[in-house]
Length: 332
Image 1: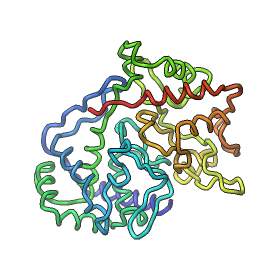
Image 2: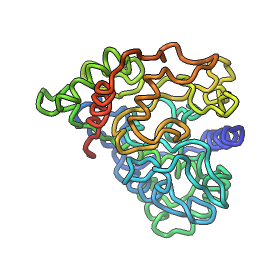
Image 3: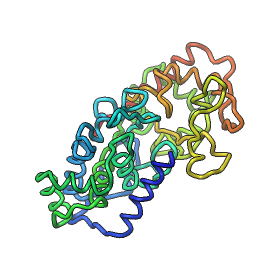
Image 4: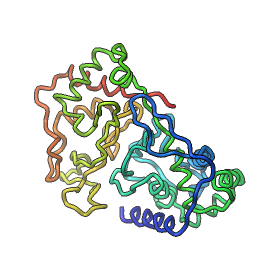
């Protein structure tokens, strides 16, 4: 964890020393039904460069991995494995979160150590158990790709390669990965009362009421992010002795109250992004619902919002799963 924080600080320091401005007119990112207008605008040339980088193996030291190796379009821009393999036999210790709708998050990584997508983008490249590069190695590797150099020139006005230019372009692409207009959105915000099955409608009522899911996975009047962008301890990841393996947000803040707390993930497209939780320990949505119904795992920092749900029937659990499955949206 300290290695990752150090790498992230190095990226931030390098960005502070140089300035890389995109050329071209920034364009707004279209907001689908159910989501607010994204806060950023991005030039098309920057997005094209970022997409090429996202799918390019030059960002890993042995050219065996891309960003998409762990954030796979076919599995909701997440990873179907509990944790992701890296270069040289390395393996991460957390499940790769989805990149869909990341433009709306106020922090990134499960522990929130990156305040922006630009900060987040550099971390995996230089993590020794992920892509394994150094900052100089990333720059040198990108320089060998003529197509990337051409796209850099289109995005920035010249083909100078810097780490800041690389991370800013990746972030520009990720900001365009916005996805809403799910059956829930059409029901809730579009006025189509036939968009949700009766089972899913009952699940929505439970989500807002008896199950209290909406206290953290928020639904506003005219949109729904399905996250409060905060950090909560659920008791996930106990070892055989009953101790939590991952200190989570505590590694960033050093506040005891944040020990083993993790960022609330959005539930949008959740049916596509199994397995679940920060360690990928729960394989199905049914397991997730059962975990919450049981009140999580007791520990000194367990969030008080996590309470056992007594008399929560089998049908109610199925209704809640049906509602979660209704959150799968349509790509822009």
